[in-house]
Every structure is written in structure tokens, then in C-alpha cells.
Image 1 (cartoon, rainbow, N blue to C red):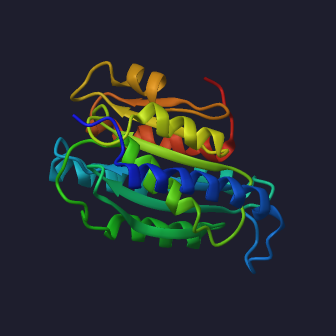
Image 2 (cartoon, one colour; image 1 turned 120 degrees about the vertical axis):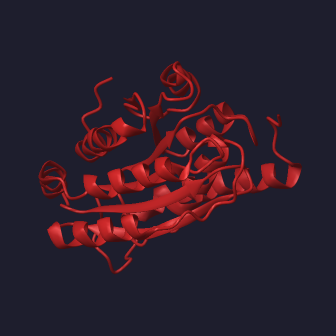
Length: 239
């Protein structure tokens, strides 16, 4: 079990944090040609060894379905800008993360339908591997540096069924993300580790109003991710 980064990767991670921190300072004043968003949300989906094909499909279909929910569409419309940006990262080991759905704006039902189709159509792209939550967070931070427009809030949404067992210490990466102004929320799936929600609270989540949503198993994932995304869009940070 490796809890440290190779020196070159550690330097790259530090550079990424500084890059994102600078981006958050200038983004609200950047003329990107696209309207500002209320939220930039990275959905990080667990694709490690512990997730079989059926469980991957339940994550994908549940996430896609969430964006068709009328309550979520209403929450987006009620935001100051009436617009959010969403991307999906698949992750497994510290050496395998993929931006499987690029940044997609959502401001109406047609946008949500297009996003849901993209999410549903994605195939599993990561290599089979261990569980690197720290790698998932770093990949999600990197995705946030490629935003097509500024956003009022930056959130990484980590879903998983295990603890970090490869790559950097997740606490260190979590703290770096929080220092850069990013909120990390967790969706703990308890089919493998019944106390995983406590682990997520203590080691994974960070930032203003960060919270953990719980799914007892993958069958409960669809409703759990709907609740989580709704709460993230609304910004109702009540632990």
C-alpha cells in the first residue's frame, strides 16, 4: 500500500493546486464567451476492482436519470444564473482516471436530456485497479482547470464503495483541494465496507458545507445520487 506520491507527481499535484487557485481568482472576470454558471460539478464514479459490470451500470444509469428529475431541473432554473456545468470522471487506481463526459452546460430540459444521454452512453474506460480516491480528486481538480466558463462554486462529487488504498494520502489531497476553494462531497456505498460513510466524513469530504450521502448498496444508488446532486445544486449545506 503506497500512501505517498512519487516526487515528480507530488510536484505536479502542487502545481495543479496553485493553477486552480489562480484560476478561481481570475475566472469571475474572464470573458470566456459563455455565460457564468452557478455550479461546476465533477461527478467522480468508482471503477475499481470492487465494482463489477452491473454495479458500474447502476452508477451510470442512476446518474443519468437524476438529471431528468423535475426537481433537479427546477433547482437549476432557480439559481442566480440558471445554469450549471457538469463533467464525469471515471477512476480506479492512482494511474487510471478518465474524463469520460466532458464539460456540459445544463440550463433547461433539452440540455439535461443531452447530458443524460452522454452519461448513459459512456463505457467503462479505466484500467482495472485499486481504489485511489486521492487520484480521483486530483483528476477532478485537473478537470476543473479546463472549465469553459466561470462558476460561482466548484464541487467534486466522489462516489465509491471502498477506502483509499493506492496513491497519495487522501487527507493530504483533500486538504489541497479545500485550500484551492473546492468542496468535496461523498457518496458512500456500503455494500463492501459498512462504516465507509464515517471514513468519507473523516478523510474525504472538505470545503464549505461538505457532506456525505449514503447508499446501503448499489440498488439504492439511483435515489442517493439524485438527493446528492439536488443538494449540491441548491447549495443547501445542512449536515
